[in-house]
Image (tube, rainbow, N blue to C red):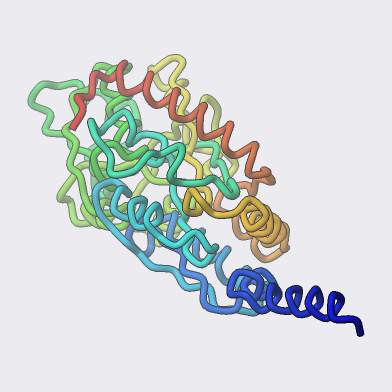
Length: 326
């Protein structure tokens, strides 16, 4: 080999052995992936995150663990994600609170649209379900609305926290139905549900996933759904729109996967493809459908457009409900 060719070959080998080159050649993933969930164990986001994570672990051949990082309507988990190394090993499963926080809080410790990257939309549920304790004096939704409209009705509703989708739907009902429900924030959907079960609050709105499980367990009684029409899981339960609150239409919320904002696009695409593949697995798809949470197949680009629209939608609702910034 001529000296010139040897030097060129040696330079090439040196380049291949550089840390960046070695990292590029290393198959992803080669260690545990952590999935942050901003809400408590047992709530709908937690259940869906664990379902999808288990399937991802099978596909990827690596452990995928769920880390419930609670507080501040998801902000603590969002900040942890925004500050995480953008290597695909830290992800976040979040809900509509992701799009709500920019309008609820005067200042966030991150830029929602730039520091956090949309990876894949998991599901959009058709409705939330308003539930009460089985021993509640409200036997139906019309009874409940009548009680909630009284100034001294002492009707309260729990939610996973200020600015959460399960909070805003209650404030929207107050605005549209003339009710005077008192909001009581908790640190997750499961504690809010437990407050209804114990009688600490009068009611709460649940995702269909959580409502189906709680109703089957006899823990709560469903009164109404928030979609314009009835849903398959509760065919005998009326919508608010048909129960004296015309035009009330509020979907059951969505869940999606996010990565740190500077995660390389090829890695975002890889993760998105694997998640969409997981959603099509019969055991995952059928479980989501049984929870009235149909899987959605979005590209990262489509999910980004969806997020922008959600930010604008919730800004309108917050203004309509006259909710002050915190």
